[in-house]
Image 1 (cartoon, helix red, strand yellow):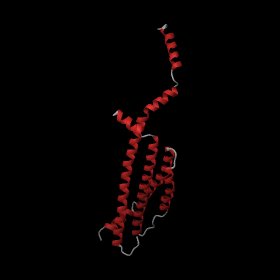
Image 2: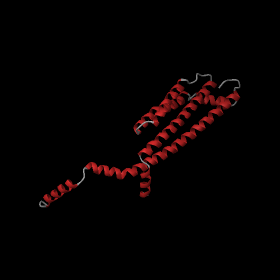
Image 3: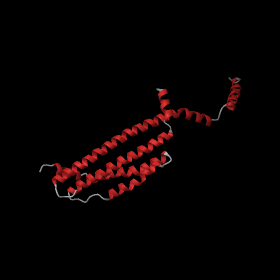
Image 4: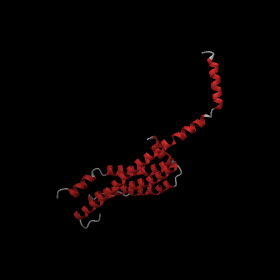
Amino acid sequence: MKRALPLALALCLCAAAQAESPLDWHAAAQAAAAPYHNAVYLLLRIAGAVWIAVEWVAAVVLVWCYWLLRARAARLMPGKDH
Amino acid sequence: MDAWIQEIGGRFGPDQYLFWTRIQCLLWTGADFVIVFHLLRIANLARALLGRRTHFISYIVLFATLPLAPFVLVAPTGGLIFLIELLVTVPHFLLILYVIAANVRVFPLAANRLFGAR
C-alpha cells in the first residue's frame, strides 16, 4: 500500500496534466444536457398553451354571462339605462 | 424515448422558447384583461340594480396595466418578460379579489332581484 501510493500520485499528476480544465467538463456536460432541458421547456410551453385556452374559454363564458344578465335586467327594468 | 427527446430537444432551442413565451404572454394578458373587464361590468350592473355607487377607479387601474403588455415583445431576456408579466397580471389578480370581496353581498341581492320570485 505504501509503495503503491507514490505510483498512484504520479499517475494522477500525469492524468491531470493531460486532462481538460473543469470548465471544459462543465461546458461539455451542459451541451449534453441541453436537448433534455429544451424538451422540458417545450413541455412547459405546451402546458402554457393549454392554460391559455382554458382562460380564453372562461373569458368567453364571462362575456356571454354579462350580456345575458344585461338583457335580463333590461327586460325587468325597461327604460333604465344599464 | 431517449432518441425522441433528443430529436425534439435539438429542434426547440432557447430562441424558439423565448418567441413562444412572448406570444403566450400576450395571449394570457389578453384573456386576463377580458375577464377582469367583464367581471367589473357584471359587478357594476349588479350595483346599478341596487342603486349603489359603481366601480370607477378599478377601470383606471385595469387600463393602466395595458401599456406595459407590448413591452413583452421587445424584452431581451426571459427574466425581463417575467417581470413585465408580474407588473401586468398581479394587479389583474388583485382586482379580481377586490371586486369579489367588495360585492360578496351585492351579487346575491342582485341575483335575487333578477331571478327571484316576484
